[in-house]
Length: 460
Image 1: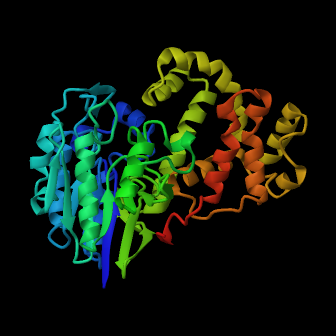
Image 2: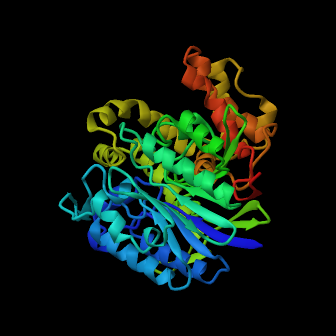
Image 3: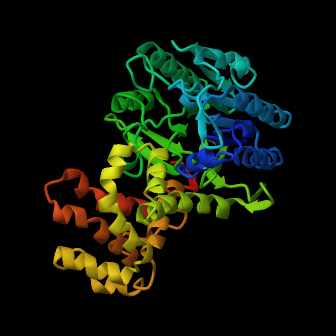
């Protein structure tokens, strides 16, 4: 027997009624890895693509709106209603869907308006009742009024959809009572011979490297809670939140394993649609993206979203290198950096970024080896890349971080040694810093893509 299902995450729909695409919006849009004004067309294209596929059901792993704006929720619900005419849709919401900072925004001209109606957490279950709670064979309501639930997707496959927005102790995760309900659902499914697949928004463990995906990304008390999930018999968990495509593994002290599939944001590179096949108890993933979407003409999805991420980086670097101090401060503030700190950083950043924009790897090699007395880089490793702009390396590392390294390189490759050598410089100059000492391991994890193929693999 074969069951095909589909997972997406972090659609972050932003209603076009909330902006006139003026200066304030351009600053906001230019400071984010994901898109804003393009979310509607991207979602429409993805849903049309999915509706024509052979998948049995569609799961959406939270943060369905940009910041919980009521109008964004209303538009998104209409989109999933249309999709549900051909494919059942099951979703969970997350903190962006009830604007946990109570500060949704609209952008008109140079002004940012904070007087935007939004949905509160206790309104979301009823609002999305038709997309999970209505079909549930078991349901748990958290202290925020948000539902976790279980549905059968086929005779073989059962979905455990978990809302992990708060654990009652100031972190994402689950209360003890909630966790006991989750454990009971896992055990019940296994007793009934079902393949049970979990879905929640936050990560149950860091992936790639803790410096990338630990802080603010995972559930609270993650080692204990992940161990209890694994020991109860959960083998697969699909998550969102980090906007990174990555497959990783957790092993409890008792030797029980969970495979975590982190789904990249649908509206930012890599725009992941994760197709899952369950057949004879085996689970595999095949990740695709929508080829094109319509926004001011037909857009190549991959190329457009890659460019959006790179522009996000370039906007900061160019503004830091430029003469216009206000432009630089505006860009930094849009990223959440306080003006006082941004002002102090500018004298340091400006000369560095000016050189960075023009520098090639051959020049960088000379500077790095001068600073480290030849300890960081081998001349043979740089030879192949000496004429490659340094900013190209920056773009590639950012894209591979969020994109799960679609074309991984060996840890023994000249490329990997070169990048690791460059990022080792801070630690060579400040040898006592434990965080800086980890940067080469972070780079290697990104470049090699990790243990699993993050796009196509059997989840063993």
